[in-house]
Image 1 (tube, one colour):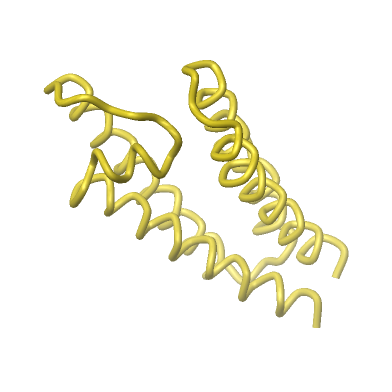
Image 2 (image 1 turned 60 degrees about the vertical axis):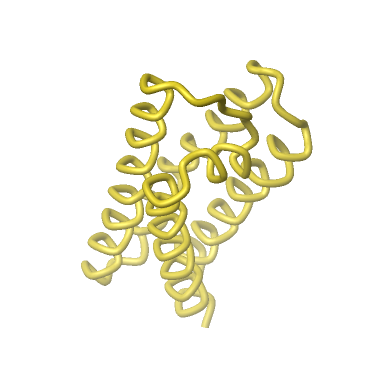
Length: 124
């Protein structure tokens, strides 16, 4: 039961991060604001927002690929390792004067969800 819940949550995480990544292409400034950083119009900043979008889409697709392996321990350890991404995102938001609510509320809660999901997969 726990492993099944872990797989469903992993699917939600994969899909959500792909959608978030796509938003960085569709509405980059709005996506950056939701991330926790205000962005002014600038080609270099826009390029980095595209980099962020690609990273997110690739992360979601990699999660889906690992899910297809049907190995709960592999998926669990993958999610534990990938938790560095939202933790680093939280630090980036804080270091650049973004709102603490975004750093802890968005990125911190994402890291906690990923660790909870990994726990279901590894201990289930």
